[in-house]
Length: 115
Length: 116
Image (cartoon, rainbow over all chains, first blue to last red; front, side):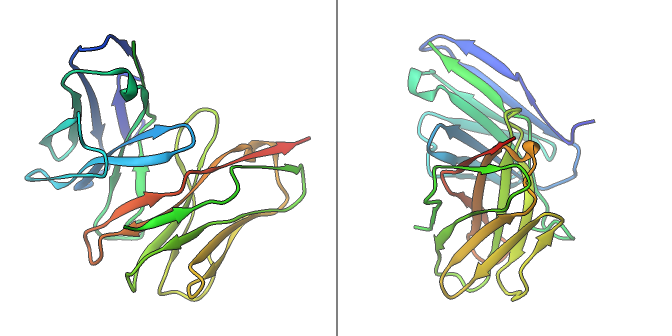
């Protein structure tokens, strides 16, 4: 079973629609992240959360919002989607101690297309 | 702001040969972590290797090894005995944020193609 899951895996939507991308994890990690990947730009951080009550903006948070519903769940919303939000979106988690300290574990990604 | 630079957008290598991917970064922090991630056509992000900046010994994982030059802020990845399954996009990443609160800054990636 996957440790970090994302739903949906692929989504096509229209300009102006509200859309939510969901992320769930069974790794027991406190820290969760949302990134977007665009060709030639690498991964850029949208939002991150170090625990349920702590949410922080990343470098490209405009046009996005998040909700940390529980330790295991972190959702990303596009309130009014626009075409330049077409991208591959990744959720990731990380531990605060142990052998994998500071290593991020990624979900399978969501391919979002905004028409 | 922290930056991570991968100067080779694309590279190719023959199967069984060795290839080195370069990465340089800029940070003002004294301790940090460095990673190489692989993204095959399946688009899954897979950790290849990690290095802790306070450790002088270069990390090794089977056919993958790094050349970490802290003073030069360089973190290159060497792949030995390249295999067709190594064909992927490779991303270098460095932690930022200091202390126990950190984020990852990624380079723009190097697309590696292994030819038969």
